Structures are given as structure tokens and as C-alpha cells.
Image (cartoon, rainbow, N blue to C red; front, side, top):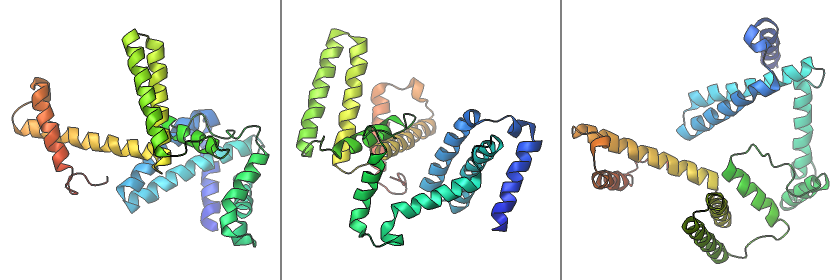
Length: 256
């Protein structure tokens, strides 16, 4: 497509002629890739197609820049990336490009990937958000049967970890407190997995609810001629409960 070729030419030109773009490396661009990915997620959550179009372009730019830098190093080009992706998609969809039954695809896909791993946990990025990585690690471990049989067992494990945290707090052991808090978070993620809930998304939505409700508290206090800093905890709790009640209204707490 002419548009793709033109875009590649533009990226090559800015790498050659723009001082800022020219000095970028794979390493220096990492933070921008992450930022653009999060902005894309916000656009998806917001349901704004115009912004979605823009953010998809920004993510694509990161792919093109990394490909151009690699091309300058004689490592690979954007064409190589495209060919590799095409071949991988065909390989992973034998039910589309071959005659394999669809229900066998996921199993055979995991088996093919496992052939190239020393550990079933290989390939899970350490740079993933912690909750997401925890759920991915536990998903992989469950493939060999290392898993709870039901949610009751997961609840029991969570209660066990909470008790261990209480004991660590009573002992005043800061290092162990951090350790036990981590175990609690891991147990919560395991419970989420068994309930077929994405822990990362669940926490993101909880964060959004907290933000909306707290902003409501700020606005309500301002209308009252008050400031949250001057309010007692009891007064703030009252506003929080009011915001929480209003959150059941879709117009206030949309996007849940």
C-alpha cells in the first residue's frame, strides 16, 4: 500500500534529519512505548473513536521507530517484522489456514510454545504490571495442574495469608510485613483467576471508582463552602457514603 510506504519513508526521514529522533535508541524509547500503550487503553475505555484512531497511530509509530533503528543496525526491517507476524498468525491459526479443529488450536499452540521453553514460565515479561504478571504466572502454572480445585480453597489460602500478615504486624517485622502483603496480593490474584476475573482490570476499575467518588467529595465540599482538609474524618466519611450511593446511578459512575 502506498500509504504504508509513504509512512515508512517519513519515519526514515525524521530519523535522518530530526536531531531528537536521530538520537533515540531502543532503550530511550521504552518509556514512550509504555506511555502510548496506556493512552491507547484510555482511548478504548473512553469509547472515543477519534482518539482511538490517534492513539493507534502513536503506538504504530513506536513500532516503526524501533523497526527503523533495527534496520539501521542491519538487524531487521519493518518488512521482516510484518513477514514474521504473518507467518506466526498462520501458524497459530491452523483451523483457519489448514484443517485442524478449532478446539485443538489453543492446546496445540501452547504445546508448540512449550517445546521452545526451558520452563513453562519462560516468556512472561518481568516488566509487566505486577497484577497482570502474577495472573499470567498462575495461569501457566495451572497448565501442569498446580492449581486450587475450587474457590473455597482459594478463600482459605487468602485467610491464611491475612493471618500471617497480622502476626508479622504484631511482631513489627517490616521485611516480613512486605513479604506477607505480597502473598496476600498473590492469593487475591489467584482467587480472581478462579473466578475468571482479570485482576488488573478489576483494580483499574476500582481505581476509577475511587477517583470519581473522591472528586465528588471535593466538589460537594466546595459547594458547601468547605475544604476537605478542614473536615473531620466523620464528615468526609459521610460524603464518601453519599458518593458511593450515587455511584449506583449509571450517569455518575459510568464506565464501571
